[in-house]
Amino acid sequence: MAAADAPAPAAAPATSATTNDVPAFGWSAYAERVNGRFAMVGFAAVLLVEALSGQTFLHWAGLTP
Image (tube, rainbow, N blue to C red; front, top):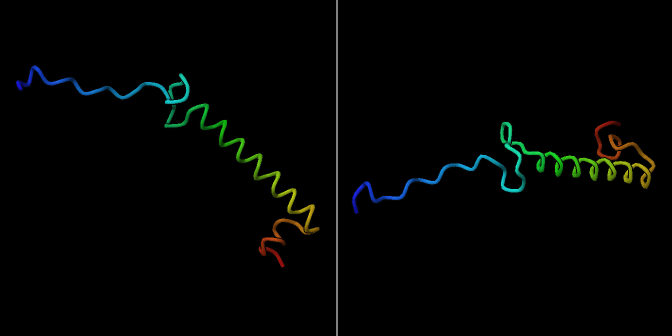
């Protein structure tokens, strides 16, 4: 097979795999949306722990006496 017959290498995609956004520094709008949702779930979990235990999260986690 001659070098001229070899297929050209595929170019890197210009957009994210899940959206048409061009990622800036590797972050896409989809990744930021998922990250925000997990942060909200974590915050709700902390509120739930505080409500059920009657202690602050820092005390419950053993970070304060």
